[in-house]
Length: 243
Ligand code: SF4
Image 1 (cartoon, helix red, strand yellow):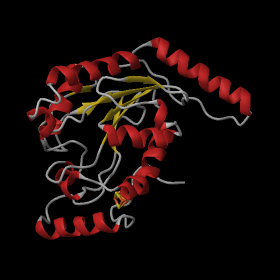
Image 2 (cartoon, rainbow, N blue to C red):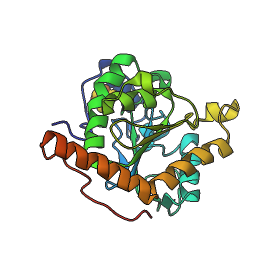
Image 3 (cartoon, rainbow, N blue to C red):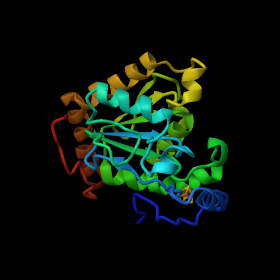
Image 4 (cartoon, helix red, strand yellow):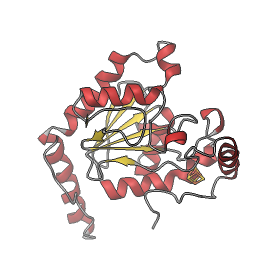
């Protein structure tokens, strides 16, 4: 079974391996390796980004840490009660996520922030393993690539769930998928995404995972699956009150 995180020297995408090696040569003090998930392993919400930024997560080794996208993401998570502590753009700050796990569709930094279709597909088993290990109530996809890769990882039909900022999808397999434009500097500088727009989506995802109704509905789905296939497919291992 695939681990939730790739090995430090994952060899599976030759182009990204070469880019990593180049970055190691230029910046030997940077992380320059696949960036592991970060957050609460008993999370009710998985946030999925695209890939590490060259000078952000690829440099610091923690998702969304060290560049503008993290400034907006973590400020919003703190505001909605999904994070606590201080975010200081470095992995040894006091920031802690509450009920949230952050992953990327692609774990290695791609040139120009653009992974290929093959690279997204090759890295997807790590996302699938993350989902299987976490079994959240909801997902927040940051951008269309994260949205599409999540749907494939979940075994859902992509055509049934069109990506759109602010869209909320009830997944046939249980749980909800919230969509947002990626919180990149480019999107905010061009007005594609405002702070208010982003806070609205994250706030709705936070309200959803805090709702007892969402827990009951998803447990019902898992119970009915166990009854149908008799496989003993596991339900949530942990049920905790939201933070
Ligand atoms: S992107 Fe994923 S699959 Fe490809 S080399 Fe990096 S960790 Fe491995």
